[in-house]
Length: 84
Image 1 (tube, rainbow, N blue to C red):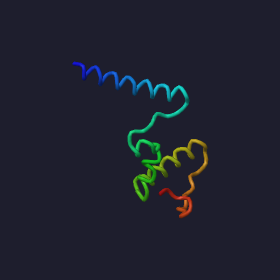
Image 2: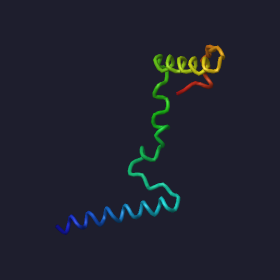
Image 3: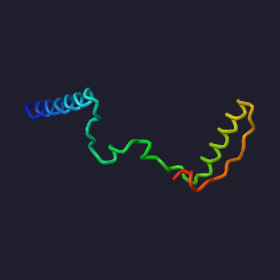
Image 4: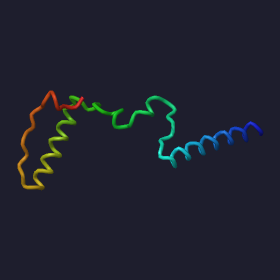
C-alpha cells in the first residue's frame, strides 16, 4: 500500500511542477523529442504530390471564388513555393 501512496505522491509532485511551469508562461518539459515538435510541423508535407489533395484544394478555391463572383483561375505549380 505504501508503494501506491509513493506513486501518487510522485505523480502529484510532477503535476504541481508542470502547473507551476504553465503559470510562469513556460511549456512543460516534453517526454520525447517528437513531443517537442509542434503538431503542424510533424504532419507538414504529408500530402505532397497527392492528386486527391490537390483536387480538393482546387475545388475549395472554386467554391470560394464562386461565392465572390470571381472566376477560378488555374494555378501553376511552382518549385519555389510548393509544399514539401
